[in-house]
Length: 323
Ligand SMILES: Cc1cc2nc3c(=O)[nH]c(=O)nc-3n(C[C@H](O)[C@H](O)[C@H](O)COP(=O)(O)O)c2cc1C
Image (cartoon, rainbow, N blue to C red):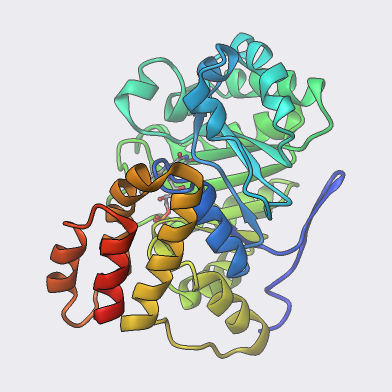
């Protein structure tokens, strides 16, 4: 299967491989991104950051754009609804020196779409183009756009959106081929990824229903996309990057980590998180990750219940070490 793992070249940027960590609100923080990079993720994305909040200097939002020490490349994803917001966010955004600036056109959450941002942009390819033009006109940093297949089943317009973005200067397109109405339910329609990859003259990154190395291989083979983006499939499974690379390069892979090894990985994740967020926040936020680290584990429910009661690093650690 060699040949499926390959670098992605954008103007001025060489991404060393084609296995990405997707933007995931509430998950892809410094600690998790750093862990995924250690397991071989080729490129990682911040969660979506409000351009309006960036422009206003909101500290919490600015912090989302900070890099972990070993993070040489970082794609920063922003959400916004107008070229003016892009213009106002640019000075602060550029001061974080993103490797790639990614425009969110996929968030289905009403709080976001009712402002015209996220998936609402799918209804206006012209606005996508105007925003991309402002960003691409202000910097040499590559601009990428993450789209859905459309707003709903009557408005499947990903080709129009991608072509508008490409004509305005975008360098890469990611697609999660569900409509806004579908949210995260049902199956992602990978045929849309194939069509986009064959019609748009830019690297296309596929997203949707990637839960194993074999899923990633199948998406690359079936759709001809340039790269794939793990999302829910990487949560609790940062080793999926290493396993996928092995599968793409050698045709075989190792088993996913199990039991104690997986819990230890969770502890390593917690350790990083404590370093970046402080013990209190880290211990609270890691609960959702531990839910994922213990998923499908024999005796998982029992240990999960105990983990949910931990509030200090030491409590997590002694529980995991005696498991
Ligand atoms: C909890 C959660 C948060 C997400 N946050 C973002 C986000 O901030 N920006 C974005 O473009 N997509 C976001 N997504 C979408 C994912 O990046 C991905 O495209 C989608 O989950 C489909 O991939 P999957 O089926 O393999 O999970 C999010 C998805 C989930 C489940």
